[in-house]
Image (cartoon, rainbow, N blue to C red; front, side, top):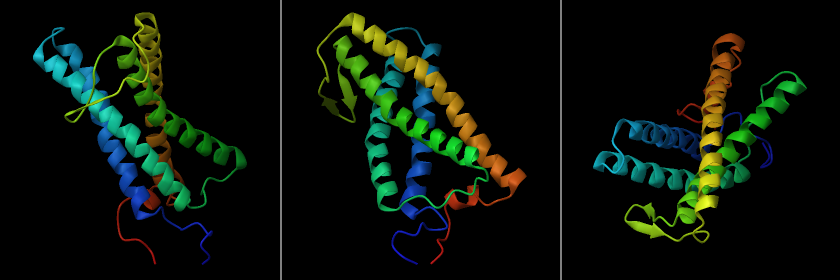
Length: 183
C-alpha cells in the first residue's frame, strides 16, 4: 500500500479527535442551554457561561489539530454510493468543520466586541477587536443562529452514520469507532 492510498479505517488520531470533539461539543451546548435556568448575574449562570467560553475555545484549538491530522492521514474512500451522496457527505463534513471554526471564533469576537474578558483555563485571551456594542450584538446573533444550525448538522451527521450502520450495513460507522486498527 502506498503512502497516498487511503486507509480502510480512519487513523487513530482522527478517531480520537472525532470522539473528543463530541465530548467537548456536547457540554458546550449543554452549558449554554442550562444557563437559562439561573438568574442573570447568579454564580451558577456565570460559571456555566465561563465553561461555555472555555470549552468553545478548546474546540477551536482542537479543530486545527484535527484538520492537520486529516491532511497528514486522508480519510478513507467514501462508501457512499452515488455521486450526489458523496458530494452531500463532503458538504456535510465541510459544514461541520466550518461550524467548529466559526462558532468559537464568533464567540471570541462577541466577547471582544462587548469588552468582556475571554477566559481560558486561568488565562485571559486577548481581544480580537476593539469594543463595539452594536457589533457585539451582531456577532452574538450570528453565533446563536449558526449554533441552531449546528444542532441540525450534528443530528443529520449522527443519523447518516446510523443509516449507514443499520440500513445500508456498509461499515461506514465502524471505520470511525475506536478499536483495533488494521495493519
